Length: 127
Image (cartoon, rainbow, N blue to C red; front, side, top):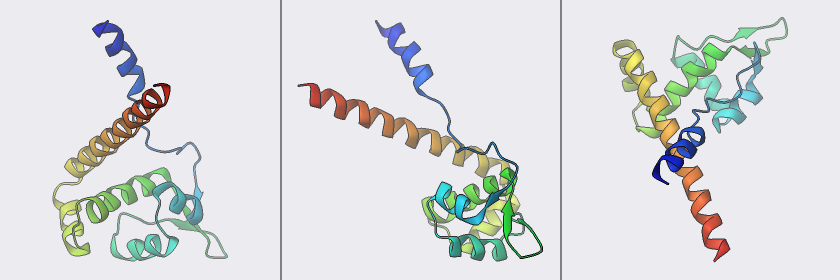
């Protein structure tokens, strides 16, 4: 029984980074993925040199998956950890890999928590 649960759990835990299967995304798509307003993304673009979306002749921003990953790290530092912009900039300069791993771990744990909560809610409805 326990091993069956572990098998279920291993298929249950999938780290979902978002659907970054395209080469380029417009700012509205990225804002929706991250759950942030486009104005925040434009501000962060001016504050963090790692976020440099390409622009076409009209000035439309096109974000690559690398840009999106950099924005996820900034979002983790500023929104989740509550750091100020300057502190987040410093943290990314000093420990970029550590921030990336922590952000991925937190995202995976939040996903697991949400899925487990959905399972609990489903079980309570069956009663």
